[in-house]
Length: 427
Image (cartoon, rainbow, N blue to C red; front, side, top):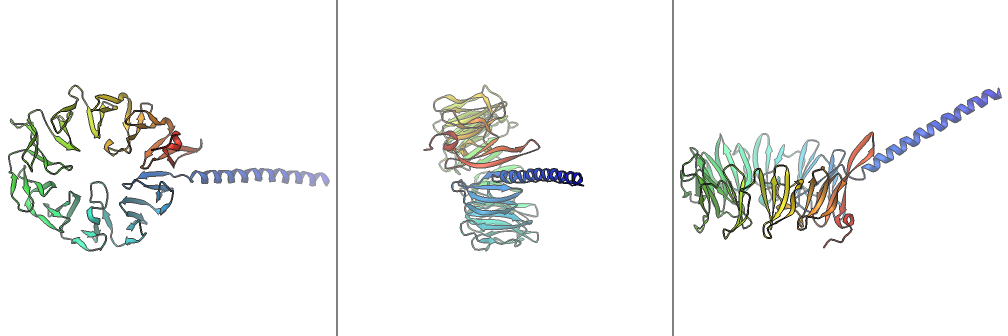
């Protein structure tokens, strides 16, 4: 009998040990994976440089990266931010929140759709947004709720560029002046209206383009004179006029329409000409960048000897791409800051002009990510230390690392000061 009791007691003892181990493992497992969510599963930049959209398990919130303060709770499926407004999605319904006050200026369920109209963000100039209700579209003033473009007046309302929105009804096109709240070019007056700015617009009829004065409708450049006309978004007076390669008088020129000055004389070998921040980029008809010039006509850099190149202006530097390799070239000093053949990707931005404080996230040929100083080419955050890096303003970055066991790995993001990662104090 005693042997039986001892045998049962031994079994119970062993069972308790096994259960204790299992429970401990479960607790450690839960605590470990709970701790992995102390970071974020996703991080993204906003047009407001001190804010970041962060996510965990499919939900999004908004934080101040400098203080870590929660601006919007992590309860939305999607967030988009511009200025002091946030577009949020929750349970398939959309609302707009004033970030400063926390007020829902457009509550959930009022509109079935709220779209972006600006070139980059969903809110357009002067706090106006495009909405949809019962299949009808219109534009409202986000501050007052008043209709700027009445619902149902048009079938299509395009994005606002330079203060104007393209409108259409029954496949006929026009232009709406957002600031004045009125139709600038009536629908159907022209087959198509393309770029607009500075009180002028490019219009198309029967495949020919013209430049008109919006207010008077007078022709500045009549139909048939050029095959292509483009208004620079950086200076509305700068107009690129082109004739197609099939045209015997093919070529391109850049003119100041206000003064009549010819900035770049007409040349047969020129295709598109872009004016940006006081610099002129000339593209050959086959869309390879050829020359970068200043307003005096001095050629700062020429890539006529290269193929498959891409060039993007960044203050005194350009980004050069040849094949799958990228470098950064200083056209003032005439040398490569970052030579070709080392990196094949710079940042997630399309333009280095958007880089912050002359820093850029780069990916080397081994697919390792690091942070570079554009001025010196030196690594601020060494390559391979983190899985990914997102650059913010005020000396902050979001860095991603893989965490977890070999059976369950996940990417976790956290916000850090660059100086603490690099070991120096930011200016």
